[in-house]
Image 1 (cartoon, rainbow, N blue to C red):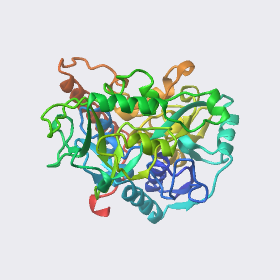
Image 2: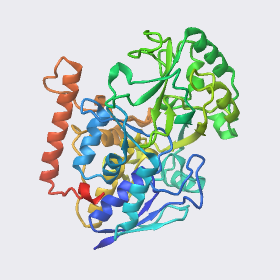
Image 3: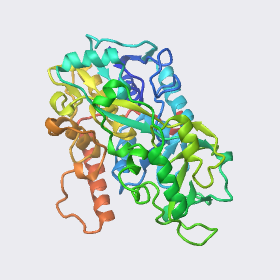
Length: 451
């Protein structure tokens, strides 16, 4: 058995990294400070707890996120296997029952003979082979240690999570089920829609703009930057009165069966658990005070009696200036036995975080076994994302999620957008298979029956 590896952080990236290394015969000590010390956003001690949306994005190959999922499945990702196992209906997206998903990941890591889970906070960077995957809510002590190591200032942006409402508190005499353009695969659709007239929309926007938000702490007021993909809805509303109607509340492709017409605006609710008892408010990340959320969001038609199972909140996200610090293998420059993975690298999105965890776990195992680390082909989505993190301009580095713009151009790109995306995907999967065969690596995942 190979010498030991320390993984700090039991989120999506750390869990995947620990699994990949352990599957390759490495002894892994996985440190997670929860539940003894919770973050401002986590509520449980489960590993791989999801705290924002329960959707992992599109599962179609013509979508960059779908391609990345396909690559991770090919490579034997534990977290993708657990996500597939605990999926809930969400049209052509992959959404999970958060509790079942976290339980599935936790149970497999707890049972692995090469993994020991230690429920303690790590305050210093271990002087041993290590993967730091502490995520966007890295504790102050460890963040200070990383800052001392890097010799650089941290970059901050602010992330917000959406409220969840009880399904039986939604007024279905007003709301209706259905996906935009009828894309839902379930008979009743996978989303509940709350239709708004122009007057209802304008009253809602007025209330939202003037609602009270949670006061920011001193350091937050000094450096208040929001990541565009998770923008608080009240911030978006202040950009213009029609910003929501053309953004998360756009009614395109939805017809209100009561009127036979397209509403002026629509608030969508997405199923959040397999039983269909919880629905999250799509695009409603917020930093409003909780009483204000109850008051303002109950102005939405159909939610006048909504029971909020979780209120939205905003929290600090922390990430390093990866292009100045990391190799595409996720190794720290100047210390090859130290790896970073997950959102702390600037990888954005659940699936991107899982991908960097897989790369770090595979390469840490190879390092401990005396083999060279792998740099994935940039024609693959996993390779292109890691290449971006390592080689973007460090002077203006921002988090990045999987997208086809990261991939090298096709020699003869089809004119049709969907066909072009599928051509990227086919090339990526073919190149990944050839690369994996050439390096003689194994896909050490789980058979479906093992779940």
